[in-house]
Image (cartoon, rainbow, N blue to C red; front, side, top):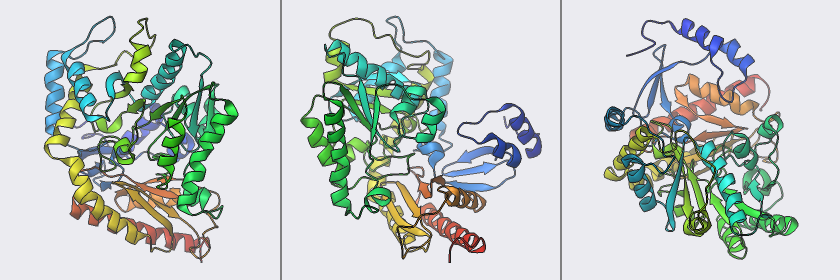
Length: 464
């Protein structure tokens, strides 16, 4: 049933403004402009209520790995709903989809992560991380180890605890901060290291050692965990220099601190490996994940837990007072299982590594010659273009930050391409099934969008 079939776009927008509070939205601006009403999707493409077609360069919100319109997933969910639409996993109870998905995730994830705690979103998974980390140290006889170290521009969700662990200052001003969280310099060479005159390899070590400095400053006896995305996604696709993760691994290997690798965006094939931890050779103690687990078909997330943590969490008995009504929801588990089956059967992760990523990375690098682009960076199928006002003087940035990125994003939509703006970086993260023909189309639309943005900025007198 098409709910919008007999309702005009204008009426849908009016009803939306009257009743629907959108996430991460300036409501005054939305009420003035009205919503874009998306009504259907197929493969890598979206359509709105006016019949306009868009190439989805953001895979929804970083999650649509296998593309839209996968009947196998819908059928699997339908079968599960007809058999057992819902039951909780509290009170020593389970059901076959939760058991099967737990087993499959233990097979797919890095060695040593054999236990799964289910939740409904990446935010919930990271709330679970905070609770689990602090509970672990209390059970280990070190209750003073409470501080969690995160990074500026890190994003771990929008609930209060997850937002606190993340390093998005605007979120902190609205939600406040949970005590016991400390943020360090991110490995953002283009924004920080370049301004300091450092080479990328030099800056990678410098940024990693900010973790060491923080641990020494706070005291190892107080630090519970370091949480980090392998590649910082919502913070602007911050790809660390090659020297960063080896130095972080050295630092953590010398200290009694848990490592949390947030795979909510990097997980399930985005980097050309099943997980960002595989790409960088990381061995986390806890690994929150979501998004690509079900390709967004139904909400589900999980925290993978290592044997080290399980030793105290399970081995000593006692109740972990934490969980969600929809932890391990049977229909969501069925969607995730069907999604993973498609990814394995079609070798989607292998194809990303061998075919799709090289094609998109080549096109992406060529966009680096555009007058507006200061840096074009990409790993797997996730990348960013840093927009600058003057390529001959890269110390200059657009002011106020974010205004030009928003302009470029809106022009991109007008050209039929979904891109995201983070400050003045344009972000791309398409479905993993994007074809080589669609990659060529995407690159052409981005170049047109950059040209149109440049023309508008010249009109405004903001660039020469």
